[in-house]
Amino acid sequence: MLKCPFCGSTDLRVTDTRDSPKGLRRRRQCKTCGKRFTTYEIVAATPVVVKRDGRREEFDRNKVLAGIRKACAKRPIPFEVIESIADEVEDKVRSLGKAEVSSRQIGQWVLERLRELDEVAYIRFASVYLPLEDVESIKREIDKLLKEGK
Image (cartoon, rainbow, N blue to C red; front, side, top):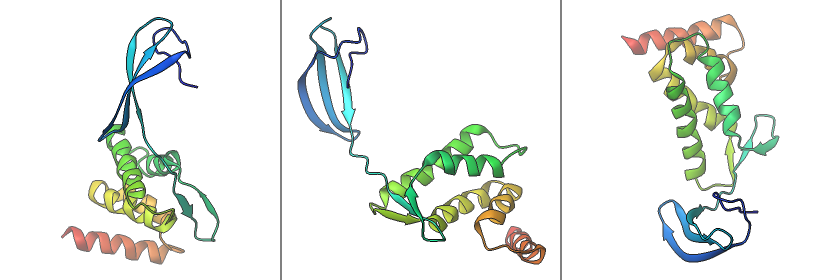
């Protein structure tokens, strides 16, 4: 239930409604204290992530963020940059406008950003999201990175 941010009352009325780039903009007035405030309403259908084994679960930005943070642990990468990568991935997932997105696609988007940002973080993340099953496959991925860097 929506409450007045000033007094906490739930006795509110809508005085104006308009479309805006942020969503549906509503001006509200509290009937208890008389103060006015603005709210924005957006339709936020949460896409479903299809895992490699076929399981499905709701998209969770925090899971993406946790994976990026693990890959970037002990690297000289500011937290704001890590947050912005998670934001970009979330925006891409939502802008697809699809009900489902594969976990591989999400992993690819993260890998693309990490490749530009930090090679060690990229390899750490790739070791989980790419089919790198042995040391030789990891070596090939590192060789590919080194070749691209030249």
